[in-house]
Length: 276
Image (cartoon, rainbow, N blue to C red):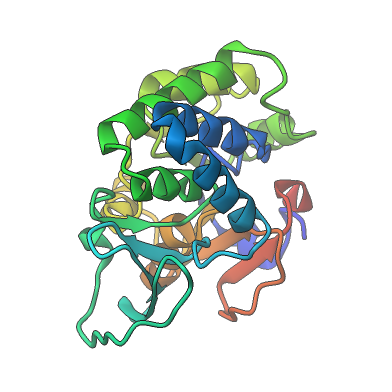
């Protein structure tokens, strides 16, 4: 795949995610998990780490793509196209007799009771909530992790060729950064990645996926772009990919796994280097 593939050549608005996209490192997820563990009572540490190991090995119902209900302690399968939830499972992986035919739109996700597990940040968060850690303490651990990532060496790896790629497409196309990270974190991370001052526009604290479609609408309107002339690039299917496809945009999905989802405007890649 290259920038001169037909759909990329005709796209005029490129909307990039930050975490997991402009850098593809994953070891900070473990760092985040251990910070959360340390905020729990010591008697919960062993169980937390056992479950975290099972999650990473794919042996736990907690997995990316699911929705977690903290009140009922259940995992639901969420279809981002029909926006319905189904097949609830208990923490131990047992099927639960529940049904729901009502739409469950992205706006329902408050990340307090209903948590969309869209990428590697969320499994540690869900584990911590299951073991009783308040949302406020989870956010503290997240903020501490972000500070470590931007202030300590070794957490972030520059994607070879990415800066020159962005500089080149910026000459003729509009590039926007849209991320759930806060502005101060974004400044630090972009500086560490040598990607500062490259984007025409930035949307920070974007509250994806709840407000993803709203942001897309505003950006297309602002830059007078048709949906089919825009592409969303990210690693989180719930946050950046499904909303783009629903809107009629193209979507480049960074996923290490073989995609079983077929859509004429969906373009899975294993790494951003595949389009550089």
